[in-house]
Length: 404
Image (cartoon, rainbow, N blue to C red):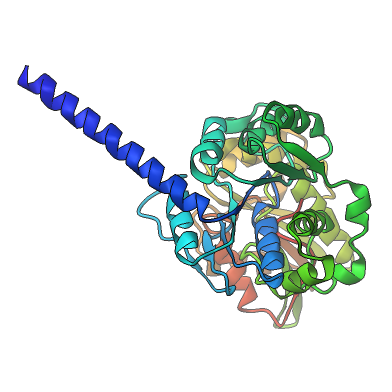
């Protein structure tokens, strides 16, 4: 019987501690009147940074947290630092982010949703963020092993973070009906950012970014800032001056003993539709090169992504070589081969050091070459980007890493 009472007291004690922590967290949330929760398949980190930058420029003390390529906490003065993690990423870290924002006296917090499991997406919103404004950039066929099996299922999962009684902003078009139905269920206002607002973002405005940002991301961020009292020009000034996400898609030109190399960092766009879009864009821009080399960074823990990209890339403008790095490369190769890709074009480079990978790419290159990294920024992806960047002569950008 003693053991029973001990177990009972421990259980009650833990429950009481949980209730106290929940109460204190709600109090800290209440100190931040504007809470913006950003979700979506592509563009979350970029839109988070854009909204935060626009609000800061408008005089609203704003903290932000991105999960993207590298998790970052952004302070009201624009400074940022890495988010320390004791182990694997966990949605509970959002509690610490809210604590920091409250300590800084933030009037607004813009926080990127880091949950994938549909239940955790709901939990993150309902228990941890309790947003006044929700943002869903788009719904694409990614993480189908968790949110799938179809793109429609992905949209339904993302809708789990629609704030009850708040406002939802989205640039998604194909699955707008899903968001409309869920928003109505939660008595939330749905604000769709359509083609008119996207087209209103001019080429001149896009060219003011230090990288080339996607018009849909800018239009979406501008709409949120507008509703919070920041005029368009002020918001844009802040966005142009903001630091981009480390995964932003850039190109780096390298002159290697007379060989002209154009390296495109496309690792951050990892669903088939987005990846095809930037590959075709790069191919068109560098149509004068002698060789095209596609570098796919595979992950054994993302088998669906490898198989999707492998199957899809067989229908893109062909590369001369497909260099496969990371882990589980056979999954990509098998899917691509079944889809009709010539197996002789594969170069398997699992567990290859980045300097050796560079040498492999150089050996495959002609007098001029396009080399583009795709699929995953994690693992060796970021290291590859840094290696090529540090050897480049000209640094420019052709596309946003948070392509919408």
